[in-house]
Length: 448
Image (cartoon, rainbow, N blue to C red; front, side):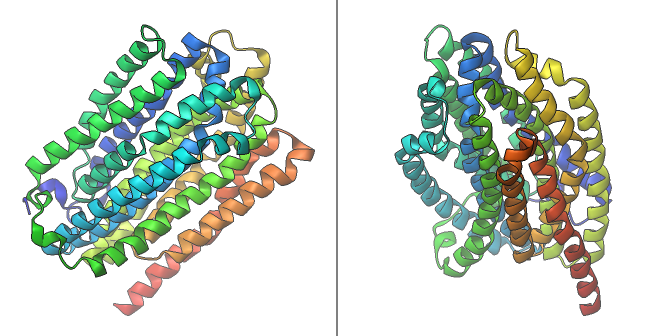
């Protein structure tokens, strides 16, 4: 194993170690957001509000697939991080080998399944007829490139589990610029429409993954796998599946509730879809920052759990909460103050009706980002200490509350039911996870 200081999250001040690790992940996630933002901005400005609505109407399906991929490969990263914290080089190599095999198999199955079901998905989503053709064109290409998304998330989670959060960032910056260039090239001179924006995203992400892998192999000897690393993987494969699939399922379950929200919005017409799309793009900023903090605390806790350092985990959770909530308060203020320029970023001359839908969503949801921050830190910490039942139960609570608010209250509250669904879900999940974390730490202390 290459001896690099940045690999070790079990030493040094927890606050500094987490912050140093998290900042490149946050920047990387922001640049990853630029992929979809560039698509939306360029589509909205060049092709119009209907095309923007077409892209937005399928965004939750794409996000659903991405969430499963993030959770699936993130679970593999936790397994690798625990082996890294325990200084088990042989176990690390087997973990990387298993991650590679499972990711390839998963990418093939998911790509075929998504592409075959594309037409049916359009019908299920109740997408308005005037944007259905463009919605299908965009969604099909993105789902066809599922393998590139799996590849990127796999290598990124492997590198982060080893303590390197910088390499994925460097190449995301490069590929984000490339994505914008390809967006303009495919949409304007080549006239590929919304499908061109999708191709730009997939090609840019694939290049980012390839470059991250090449540089990672130069920096970490453990990434140079041998034939022996692929032998006797039965037990390791079971461990990875037990960690990865529940995490992928949990993250995708959260999206099922958001899918119900999108279906309600789609039923309200094109203006509602356009306003909600612009607002949800801004809302993704908070989601991605909180996901970055989840990545940081996940790798931190996994390594320290593997090393048996309970008190250091407690210190890291406190530090992560301070950092996460600081970001959330700043984002809440910024999003509310800039909610109109945010809409104008995505489309020219938005109507009053579009402003109405975007304003309602952002002003209701943004103040509750602090609850999302609590949920992100405590859920990830519990998962990284090999407790899968509590995060799963919390996800089911989120699902029930999100669907209940959206579907159950839409007749009485209309669009407002969509706006309050996420805050209600976050409150419900936190009510379970926060007491669970403190019970786990108390029990661990008694065992010691």
